Image (cartoon, rainbow, N blue to C red):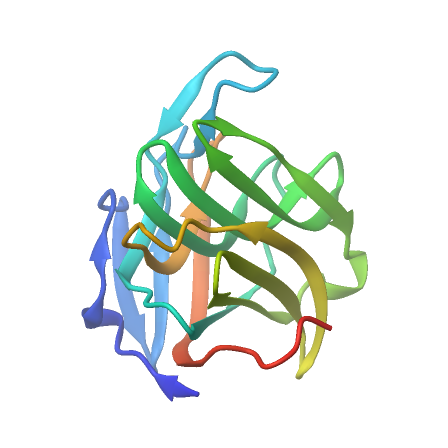
Length: 191
């Protein structure tokens, strides 16, 4: 994997504050920031914070951050976007009292999958996405022990961008610490 400079990306929405400290990126999210389209809730949010760059076919991307947030729906991870109606977010979201690893896959309407990862609280976590063919494979974990989170469709005819994300749907004051951003070749295996 090759390290990506924080300056290589463009924000989908400028955060409240951004600073670099000893190679990390510290970001404060705006209250109400999120991505979601319609399903079950009936609303559309297109105002999360994503620091994105090109995500070409047959490549992978990793984002690492400190899982130290504890308010409902706070989340950090990776955002993959083609346009306002076609995107994926793979993140660790604090939901219903627990950190949960999951993904929201959106093609006009959003879906959501989650799984508890309480043992990751207070630690550095990595989210990895790998793009091949007509799919993206999402993995997440710690210290190189990555678990499969999701295999989802990703239209190969579209151009995609990806990078670190942070969202605070239900409060002000979420500050996330991103420790690394890197890219490399696509994964050779699904499992």
